[in-house]
Image (cartoon, rainbow, N blue to C red; front, side, top):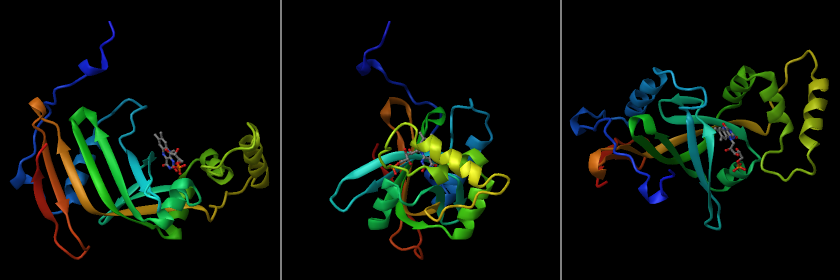
Length: 218
Ligand SMILES: Cc1cc2nc3c(=O)[nH]c(=O)nc-3n(C[C@H](O)[C@H](O)[C@H](O)COP(=O)(O)O)c2cc1C
């Protein structure tokens, strides 16, 4: 029997958050949560590092898509993409972005708001070089977010690049690389029974300031 949408619901019982056990720095709590995920073997299809990136445009529109978290620094979250993609063009005009993680096995979500900056070319080069050759070819050949002329355009572009760089490393294209999201707000949500979830929001207005911590109503 198929359940109606209205009847789809879970009770969240994994645990709770205790205010005086929370670290002063939200990155430390994020790292604790992420380390736990890294210590567990999940089915291959579940990507613990998948996150939703939301961007906005100057007309007030907004857009979300999944990207993969590929690194953390003490002050931010790294991902890689095509700088000329729709998101790349939006972030060039409006660097305020949001990230979102949902880890249902622990009844947890993390919301992040911050400013995005491009990583150094050295970081982009290092990550690009670490990717499988097929992914490198795909990144070079794909005019990400553009309308394709026909079904063969990509295959032909990949084949041409593969021939061009036969037996050689593929150089990172200038229009592909990393971004770092530097948060000024991070909210940790822990699902609890009866919808009385724990929400703690860290916030600061400047990167030199200490983080404030507030508990929010669920
Ligand atoms: C699981 C998953 C992982 C993805 N990882 C990335 C990524 O790391 N970088 C990226 O550019 N696109 C990634 N994508 C594709 C994006 O969601 C999106 O389709 C693409 O970046 C184009 O977005 P845009 O047109 O808004 O720029 C991923 C998609 C999924 C579903």
